[in-house]
Length: 313
Image (tube, rainbow, N blue to C red; front, side):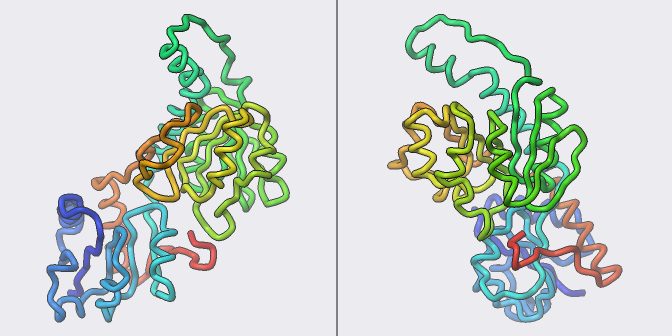
């Protein structure tokens, strides 16, 4: 039987955890951590399960047929692998979508219920109740309506918010006003008070929220970025925050992670910094998803739907 290689650049304890979950989900497979495999064993590998792999390691697997990523986002993997042309399958896990929708709702509530303002009042010893508004009178926009974005939009709608969504291709989500295409983005931005970014990072989305598009948001709008740091132009966001056009930003992702100590985001009074925690992959549920892909491949020879390398997702 061919082998499966686990190829990662994550800490050893994390790698061992993944190896354990995968072994339990795939008891009939021979799964080995890449560095522990001999050259002869590497030649037997037809599937690589990867998390931030070193491209040089994958090049040591001459009979590799396809790659299964353990992350939902694959832009780093695609960029680092360069001209690598074997199919790459990204992780689509309903538990990840549930976790992300939970985070989108939690941090939307954080902004909607004026938590940053109350925290600032506490530091100044100010006792002042801010006016309440109903969710139905608060317009929340979701950028990106893939698996994660659609789940977030539905969760927000179920909580009573007036939800607008935007994606490059048309989507239909019950109760959500969906916009599609580049020509509708400015109109959608102008409609929303809280903007949740859940777009994949591609050539088209890098720097998408630049100074011009941030200016399209209503005065005092707030931003949540749970996607990727480079989608928002950082200097433009800081300028918008400094002049109050954007009143607060919850940032879970950055161009460089961990966020450097010198970053102005750390100390900015209108910024909440999170350490990339909005939706962690669950090894237990993810291993079951991966196992299903492997089992289907063994039974039929069909590789699961893979990443469109021209789009980057």
